[in-house]
Image 1: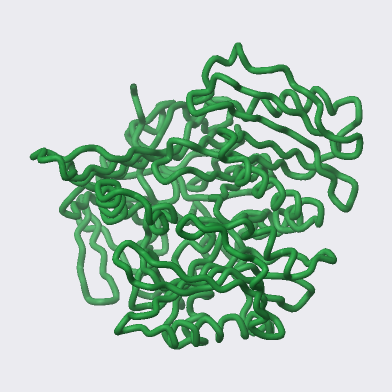
Image 2: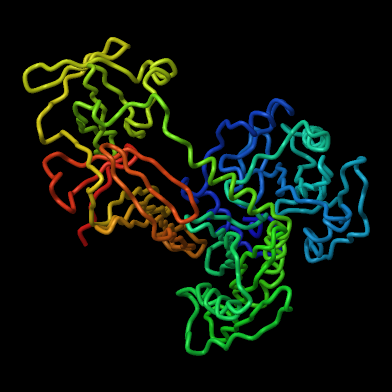
Length: 562
């Protein structure tokens, strides 16, 4: 997206395509802003600025006035906080932002300004396509604990409804609050984040960083393992095997991949492999071992698409090493695992408390779905089956969510539900719409998933798919994939739209283990996380190894028979 904003030398056709591409990106890729704790703190501090949803979606926090969107011209990006490690703010500023060009001219980083006692920055200004003037900073904020927060700020000089003075005032409030420790950055959703890279934390404990060009055809991949013990005699084979995992389906002519070449040191061994015949240029694959403070190691690997991306590749690897060598990545990973492993409530309900789980067919105007409710033996009914009965503290739930609880009685072949708002609902209570749980011996076989589609044939759209592959041996994997296409009317006289961009992703989890206990399924992941979800299958198919549908976490997933 930054390329679309700052490429002032693009021709008119490319500019139109870029603008249309941004305007019609599927909403699944550009989530709407919504209130969250960090965003609420920012708004309370500034009066009108908010933080985007999905805190660290691009490895940084994007803030902007609430009256605009994240695609607007007025915005501030806060990079992940990092330890000083005897580095000056000037050194951190140079590491993150130098060299830099605006309109083909190199930025003079000797023009560093001490904005305040805690903020060092380089001012910049430029003309955009419509000749409107912009002003902003690349900078570094010193925060408590001998840490730094790099940032960028973009303001508009001549915007009638949001002046340069207003923009600078709000940004100054944010910087002052960070420097005083009154505003703290939200924790990343992964063990560490790197600005400009999308981060994903896998169930195997690996962090994967991705950075692509705007249409997704060229991609940097960096992978970092959890901390582990490594014996010296294992190093060479471990790095060769690890480097092989970084070679993806886009790397052509694998028979021409060069042999691994040692390029590191005894203390920090690295190997290098080259893919000279890759479709996008000479790929470079590197893998190394980085030591943690406690003496353990993490594997770090990078697939760099071609020489023109080497600066981005080196930046991503250097930032990853920073969080490894300080131990911050592993500390955060342990916290994430512990937070995920919340115990069941001491006074939770039991699967044996469930009299039935009846499904009601619903139609929301665009699709049909099955809405399942818990019917308990005490005559109560609970509207939310995202949690298994064992996960529900009934007394607390009734206090916090009273509208979700009703009463039910039998009436012939139906059940009649009375809800707190006075609504009376008749639900068929036959075997066809009854769902049941399983037991410790229950094992399923098949891929169960759901697909969501958005967009249309004219502007393009997006398709996302999520599901579980459940196996008879008690193992499973999750998969999450997405594809998008963008079409636009180009100024070439064509009466039909032209596809101008396509892309997508596919993530498959590590092989993990599952257990079923009544209406609850428990997933055990290799990194130590334990995830509990509700579970049920249609009563009419309970004896089948591959029933047509399963309910996991309140969502009905369909068996893929192809």
